[in-house]
Length: 64
Image (cartoon, rainbow, N blue to C red):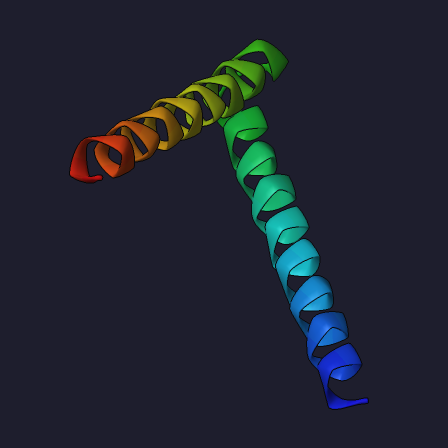
């Protein structure tokens, strides 16, 4: 019962704050530039996340 509540809170906060951050950031970028800059910004963030994930996988395999 408590675990289900914790998962619900985690999901609500994680998705809610993530959605809020993305919408807020995209709005700020849209005021200063255009939609292509918004896609470029989030594309660069996604690429950074992929590179970071691959680097962490490489470090984990190296330390084994």
